[in-house]
Image 1 (cartoon, rainbow, N blue to C red):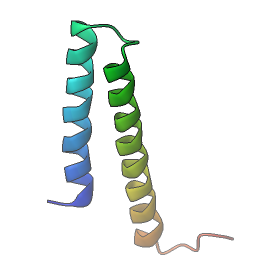
Image 2 (image 1 turned 90 degrees about the horizontal axis):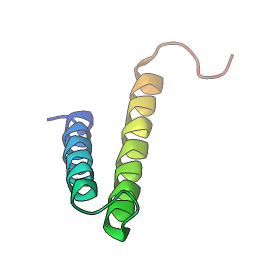
Image 3 (image 1 turned 45 degrees about the vertical axis):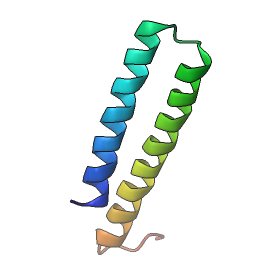
Image 4 (image 1 turned 90 degrees about the vertical axis):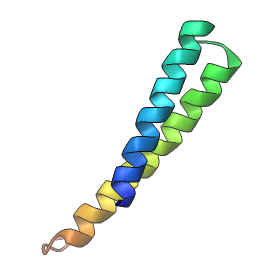
Length: 64
């Protein structure tokens, strides 16, 4: 599996866990806020991976 695929699976699992926990308590509970933060980190990492893939996979110069 590629890094992007693994991150996608991790993101979906974290999102599902966040929604489940929010349903059990509330969207402002400490655990939900922690899960939200963890999800943000995964999404940022995914964005960086996609950006690096796009930059390195392109034949065009980064700066014109």
